[in-house]
Image (cartoon, rainbow, N blue to C red; front, side, top):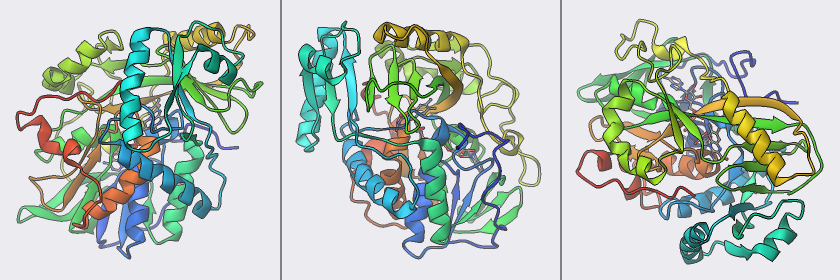
Length: 448
Ligand SMILES: Cc1cc2nc3c(=O)[nH]c(=O)nc-3n(C[C@H](O)[C@H](O)[C@H](O)COP(=O)(O)OP(=O)(O)OC[C@H]3O[C@@H](n4cnc5c(N)ncnc54)[C@H](O)[C@@H]3O)c2cc1C
């Protein structure tokens, strides 16, 4: 059985030598980097994927495993619809069981206000032909009969899916490697090599690789990496805690959440649990720098985030984390191979209590594991997926804001086209880098 999530103790699976040259270099081996690499390899492009620690060891093995269309920003929805199709196709092509199942996603509402919010999303879903619908109390009771009944109703998207992230993303990486991608774990990208104003290579801890095209898909580290090259993006990362139960009787085959507790059936018969929208932000220099941009998000959910005075040593926005380094010296990326935050004790208590309140027949919740991940957040809760105007040859793909696993293959396919200068088939205006500097107001994505 795979031990999840991954840490530095996880064995290295990919250690090809660093090529001298590559058509495209991808920095970051999470679901976004891995998917991009795979689709590029399918276009006969030589691709090198650099991962400072282990494939999927950060967010991409720590997430809840929800692959959802439900509750998406209207501009993300067409991409996640494509991603759902790609997940089905890739699950076949992997030749491994990644736990992909179409068991639906359900949001539970305690208030009429929440039901009204669901109704708004319903219009977006219907416009895209997604099978989202509202459930009344009776329908919800038949969907999850064992659940206590404080709810007014729910919203469900039956075609939404789930998969086991710690299985799925390494399986995609193995598929990519079979299709020709050079994947190198334990290999941090230190600096971009920029000549005559455009990308000419990447300096890594294992040496130099020449390339004209780089995709930065570095999750919570992206802002630190880009800032060292003069590009400022208002990305922060927040800690979110997750727990896994041992196998237990099935109470629901899919994924469901209200604003207090989220649960999802796993392949091994346990449930992955989390406490809805609760997270912690470690205050660091970037938090001060970008605070103004987060005003709308703060107003929309004033109690959703707790603030902690300082990140542990070496974190991307740590007070003592270097902001500048040279290509021939150790960078912050190799100093922390895997961002592996401790789970928050009070969140674990909330999860335990919340689950027992929902399912009172369980007097104890048999937790077998807990962990946390640092979510790469953006002020408007949608990512940056764009060419960097300041550095030709560079594409930025980051800030998936807590929902990048499900959309990953769709973003990967898009990025494989974007980096080659092809039409992507989607309108990416919403995800442009310049929205944070061109005076555009912050347009908050859904917090559903
Ligand atoms: C607790 C939690 C629950 C979530 N639940 C869901 C969910 O149910 N559904 C969903 O769709 N999404 C969910 N998400 C979000 C999802 O996991 C992320 O959006 C997605 O995994 C982001 O993928 P990524 O490839 O952009 O980043 P990551 O997975 O974080 O990968 C970035 C990689 O880049 C590497 N890296 C960084 N800097 C360098 C460098 N300089 N050189 C080399 N490598 C570098 C890192 O080591 C890391 O492995 C959740 C996230 C968390 C934390």
